[in-house]
Length: 152
Image 1 (tube, rainbow, N blue to C red):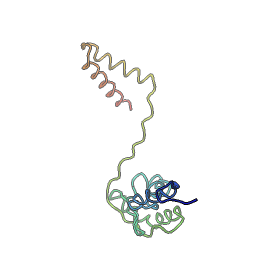
Image 2: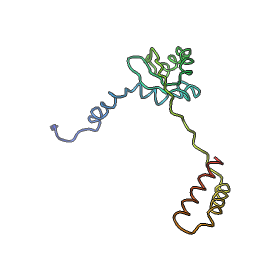
Image 3: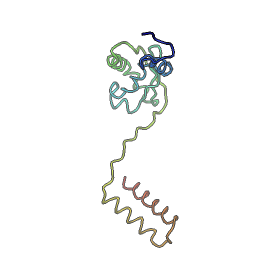
């Protein structure tokens, strides 16, 4: 059976053309380090640092100034952890970029239904003297949000 250039092709033949631009921007090793950073560095270091770029064996890590000094002392252990995790020598040097990493916010636990109901009742009571309408509804929603912020 003859195969034509513009005929049906296997999906696997199309994948390299699609992923090549993405791998040029961010190599697979970099993507793996970014994805597994907390497992590699540990939760304490991962909370205050973020890997930025891996190029030619040098991993750039963003962290605050005081933490950069501490991480310089931990550099040999960090390099060893990264290479052990990767299964090859991917990192030979660390470069620290002084940049405050974005705060990782833990999701708020859901409020108890009784607390939410009490907040809604208090907000409704605060706007009870206003006439019905959009303004009253907006002020009631604002009151619920303010009360929820005080509790959460």
